[in-house]
Length: 202
Length: 367
Image (cartoon, rainbow over all chains, first blue to last red; front, side, top):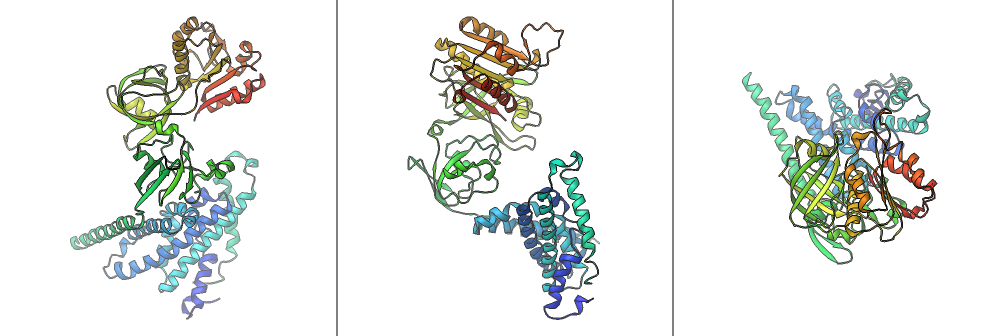
């Protein structure tokens, strides 16, 4: 067992990334970002597209929100505004990225752009920014935490997409098709992810 | 206390204002594509438009109206045009609506193509003829409990040239928080009455345009429509015709039949109209009267759920079941179908079983 925050150099960054992705998986242990999982996880490629967009947005917004919190909210003693400020920052950032992506690469826009508005109000993104506040991380470590949380979310939705592709939903009882079976899959997967817990303490 | 509240409010206001300004500024800078040239049908018409909006709306701003029933959301696939250059990649929204042949022929949904550079495209010639009309609603008349007829006097341009069977797009403006949309309705008036347009509209629960028509639109109100569009029309052959319709599918056929009367077109014709019970029937007297003026025409209303003890003398049962009684051999017939897709699919199957030739089936599906 390692105590990540006490290490120096790049090692803690890696550890934070891995722990955020596996031991502290935001989807499977915190159950955040469920609505888009239930909605978009029908196929692997759309799942991974959404996953990639989430990785990008969690990384950037956790960094941005870290800076906003540290250099604006704390000096002004306005910490209690963090929730609303974070949401506004995330929404503006996503809008901005959507515009930039649309301008620079049509391929990327078609692959990721359509998912961006979907995740503007995704609770996983806001969750990452809020959880980050409870940690003693510096800026680089915060980025690693954001990227790790996003990667964990993407991994989870990718696996769920893969499983749902293999499941013949026609054969399920009607009430179980769609969200029902997805929730059961998520439950079983989160049991599996319990196996990672305790491996790294952060 | 006051100070901290002021600080919090002030901070939030400044923060959101800053971000909003940033976004507005970014949109101006980033999404500004400058003037782009649209080359339509190999130079037949060239337009210079400001980039950034969709091809559909850029064309509409220049009085070229591509049909679009869904209002540009990419769900009706009416607005297909050929884009040869400058359309960019096929987006995920339009992909499901494009067949492999469409893709080979560079067909795109014009509502999903953004004008970002010079574009070369081709549209059907008839769309140059389509215009946007300003008109005035003369009357709104209930035909049944859920169907109304609108009669619109055209003001500018003041007359319309169309073929019986074509449709127009009616614009419903923004109201009560609903978006402005365009919806397609077949013209039920006759082409000779070129200063007016009549349409027949069935109420769609939660439908944006029909709710507007039923609850907000008043007589003498100004309305906008564009058209004519569509290829649904009677052929020039003398082949016997069978018309099949349900609900507001009456409209194009009502127009075609009345035009046949004007021209004295006395080809053999049957008209099967489907309804649940007598409340669904309209124009019944007029249609039976038409039988006298066109001796070879027969009107056959078919009711599926009419009360068994009622005074109804006509057919009871679905059209596919009634049809063989009148048309044992459908081989020489041409069929014209108009109505919901379930009705059309069932009737096309029945016609096929009775030997009609596939190319002789024409239909206009109301989704």
